[in-house]
Length: 254
Image 1: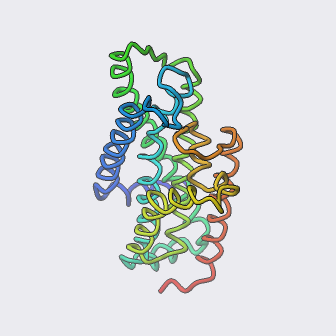
Image 2 (image 1 turned 30 degrees about the horizontal axis):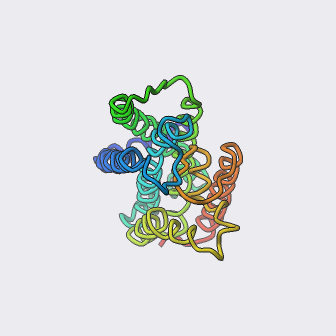
Image 3 (image 1 turned 120 degrees about the horizontal axis):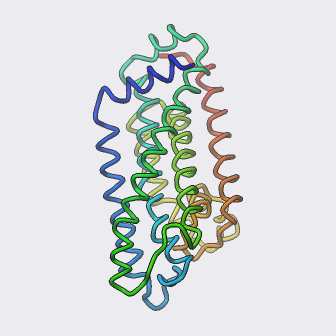
């Protein structure tokens, strides 16, 4: 397994895609943090006030909305790229147990996800702390539940990496996998969560569970407790991973 994981890291670092996606995720984090602070105290905003612990956790944990979709994209490309670049045949010939190949990817990309989550959370803190200080709001990075929010962000990003690998195994066409992933995470789920007929189940959507785990309170949607959100998101990741492994073992490589 160590050899397979090392091979996955080698494949990833042969291009700079991981770096470009990290930079894009950081840009998204900047956008989300900017919105959270600039409009955080406006009347009618469902976000907690910026001078509260919940409001400060929301601002910093908004970094999850930048990091999670992009690590999922990286992971999906890493899996679907095996088929697009015709390397799946040699990969599975070298390792006939295809489930071990997927497991290696599901270890490698979450480890990279730790970096994505930590970097984006640090960026959010670097933006938010001085900005809030100018508003006479002091932020303690060791208090107000912020360490728990950081842990939630990192775990959520790691689980999204697993989801990305699984999606790349399910939708082997690379462009289709990436487009589907971005459309759902950045647009479709948000629209569905706001539909009145779906209000009762929106709490259990993957993105809403992710926000519950990271403690991001920005939508007018009831959130689970962080640990409950983590369980829901982990169940999504486990289910898609199991299905992805099942289809990969059954399908022809070509």
